[in-house]
Length: 571
Image (cartoon, rainbow, N blue to C red; front, side, top):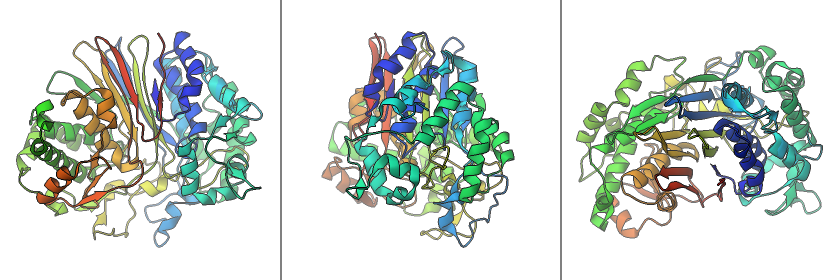
């Protein structure tokens, strides 16, 4: 098990016990997500949503739980016209959360342990042991399909956090500093703000979640994952939302359902199979990148010398640009007929066609060359967890509330940080900095899910074993980071630590330059500039990878040092 929060270290005994108790990989993922929803409140939680890729070894098949938030029934494509900032912050910015219903669906399908036990470690952090968000309904959907342990047992680690509190991380502190307005929220202020000093608590401070949130978690542990949508909590939750000014209705909550569908299974040229979620995730973009580059037959020799690295990185960057040009045409597959586009984009022949267009000597700064005549709104935030179970099953799950602390407030009596997923939709009439119109494929519609960069992925070898379980946080940098780390491990022959730790490059068409991390050698930067690439070093963490690699000798995992995640396992 691997997650992008350092506090996983303190939960090893609780989360490891889930696997020891014959819990499924989905059980462990659900328990970890509830805990992460407290440790990483700035990035994920019950007020958000997720994509989960589940591989069941016995079946030799992978599934996707789509618990991405949806637009309320009263939402319209033009609802933010002239008021674009309202899509970023406040009550109109939120979509129907899918987190809990998604977890519940997964638990009902694949869970083994008692549901409440999965929440117990989290509730131990609370003082009282207690969009339309898709997070809960998504978890519930996953549980119903694959859960093995009682639902309550999955919440046991979370309930423990409510009781005992937890140490505030540097990442959480940075999130607070980036969203200082959250100190005006009663629940967040009580948890994270020191009124005596007039500042947020510093990293290392032991904090406890709000009483309101812990009470909510306790009810969910007892009553299950539908509680927030059509149970006793739904009434209180809806009252909180409507008093805040949200357009979410009781019907919106009742009608939200997480989807369990087959993952896209794409054969790779070495006989492995890559499993990714369908749109509105960016799984097909990941496939497209790998297909474009596979024909170069990269090996460790492709990065031997400075000249080799310059050419290899140039080709990778060009693949990124072409893939992100295609991304502007994607959206929610429930609202668009994307079958032909998906089949084309994920085919090796299309990858070869794009590869033939790449000029090894130079690049272009014309977006039309890469098929981008419109743009999709960039997304943000997220947290990721990767798991390989005792029986060979695997889970890769990425969750988000979008911006740091989502819409910037919690529901007063239920204590949930609400998403601002409406900002992930493209907005009619809003011309971006580059003069391009927004993509109609990603316009708002009632019940629609916006496009996302989340790409939780599992690569399975010829023997049916989960070989690479990988995903990332980091907004629009997610997909390129997953692609680059996968290449480094599978093609360049690096260890999983080298593949994750090495400095990364990114290109997303808008802006038209290569964004690179500190650590890329100056000779490489100069060489790429000579081919016409604009080069811009980006500050901060960028993308955060959680990856597990399995071969005959064992399982090797690396949590990205950029955020201070951790690895937990059992003998």
